[in-house]
Image (cartoon, rainbow, N blue to C red):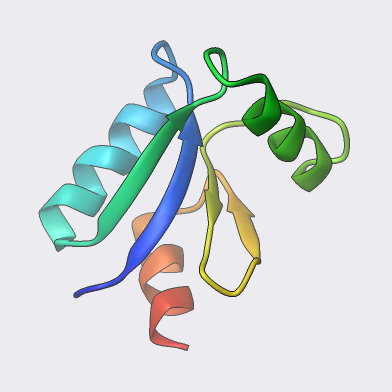
Amino acid sequence: MSGSVTMYSTTWCGYCRRLKSQLDREGIAYTEIDIERDPASAKFVEQANGGNQTVPTVLFADGSTLTNPSVQQVKQKLAA
């Protein structure tokens, strides 16, 4: 499945590593941004998650986000 998303993550996040490997396996392109290295992205994640820096947060081309989604949820959103 093709598609492109932005995934906000951290280096130590196990859920982020899992989602990255699943996206790779499914052939879904993504741009990864480490919120610990990018304060503006950390603020974006906070805004998307009620003040929390919860990762992975996935941003779609339409501006919507999903927090800690399954690969199936990402695929469904891209197909919509």
